[in-house]
Length: 167
Image (tube, rainbow, N blue to C red; front, side, top):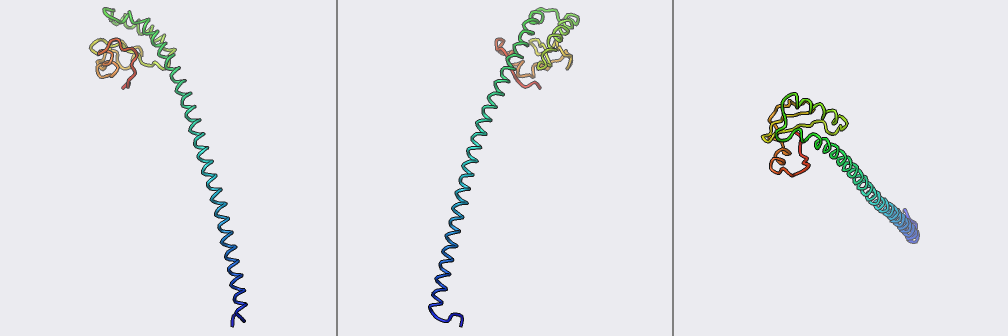
């Protein structure tokens, strides 16, 4: 016989119940500690994420302000070049090769200091290019009509600076 008496069986069952109770209590405590630790980690990750988003927004704003300042300075410089040469390009200006080549050469000298303005061209009212400072693509071309910026200025002469796709 495994147990000699009922009291030994009762003692064994009591010990077993206490051990199971202790095991359940230890398991519950371990799960509570793990759950608390996991919750704190998740909360910390949310804080880290929020900080990263705020930092990213500040950095993006700084980059945008820098780009806006750069664009303003570049467009101001290009505007000065255009204002200087506009009287030589408008209306009944001499558009023969020697005259336009001299204008092109002088503009190229001024534009070499503006790396952002790599192509500068002048179009007539029909969209034909009569001056291309860089020489690429060919100066005589009728691709102005296909450009958004040309159509915008043709339809509204007082529009001002227009930015559109180059190609």
